[in-house]
Image (cartoon, each protein chain N blue to C red):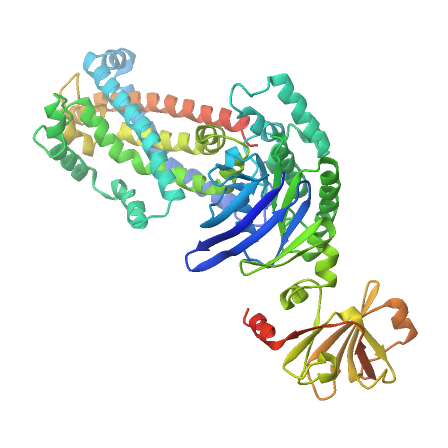
Length: 347
Length: 276
């Protein structure tokens, strides 16, 4: 089921949580809402799920206005960051909850409920835990149960609010791959909220980057990483070095005030100047982190550190030591004029 | 021999246990056993005659029935008050929160006199009841009013923290799964607060059984109708019938103990069924 959001606004006191949001979610896609905390992504998700009400704007499911519909009538599955499982119920009863509270004429008989619950528990690979209580499960298991519970009512839309936020790194990684595979099987239109860019880029079909209640960019993971639309997206997704036109005029290619944004892995290092735009720097620190080598350099007479990432092969071809004088040059960069930059730094 | 004492990082098990036993003996056990010894001077026959006396039975019935009714009322309205205090934000919330403790702080006699004045047939509230030929003060109904007043904080204060512990998210999860309001309450909230509610009920009930100060002013104290057992004890004491007084006390104690035991059993049973 597709979701259309038009001119959505939400205000909490004097804080504008959502500022004129327009978004189209395609049927069957897995969409990530990505942004720093307080950017409005969770508010947006809650409004779609019917747990909050927008001040103004339109919300359509498959072209149908659902604003007046209560959360319980939207047929939306919601997964919470802290699981929100029913503590006094077994895993089985948690998953069966949505089936048991159906109106009498729609309710399945006990045998059918049992069959469906076990089917879902098998889907999340936790059938063997069916008679345990949530307190006896690990965080990753609880979140999978919460997902099974949400899927029990056969929702047309699945909303996940930082579903892996409370888990440790290893489990997180495992679960998000598993979520991707599950989505490929079920094809439910899904939106998940995260502040973790790696998670969004790895799992989602499309990523919506949000900041201060506005959408900064909508695109595939590749697009938002390789072609950020705004300085904010540049800085939020991946690392970036900023070069001001005052200091590095040749790179900004402009005469006015401008800033060039360069990814750490888009910088070349050479012993000799590549051309007349090369910048002479001194190596301050070299650190090997797994498969990449991170080099920190500083321009002559400037304390500002520039971060450069090299692959191991490249580094081995020209090893560096602290204090070496080298030349750097960006292979790829993007220039934003300072007006935008100021807006950014005010953030 | 079973392990008597688990290893602990905090020393002082012997001292703490010794002190606990001494303290319990001095404050609880010795006075209570004195009660039984004094009662024993009556002998079985004397005790039986006294315990089955019409007036004693009537007073016990009044005490336990009104206490039960008051505790039940408190369970309902206490849960509601706790709910409002936990879930909503409104101006003056802190004041309302503090008001709940008032029955703890107010001398019970003051509460009794105030309630009696309010609910008397010519009182502020009593006149409206009187208009419909309902008498509150000086009847068992008045006793229930006083005991409800006394017991309210017990329920609110035991349920409040437990209710606060049930995240709003759990209710939202239930709603998004299609549960109506009644289903959310019945299947999600109530099971979570039920043990605490039972504890609050038991506390309010126990407190009401022993209540004396507030009740005697509003009850009217008519033998067989609105005379409570604690009043009968005081009456016996005034007649220097110490053994008779302690005998009634022993009776009350046994009944209370049996009831609290049953409530605890119920709680144990329900918690075994529920979250482990």
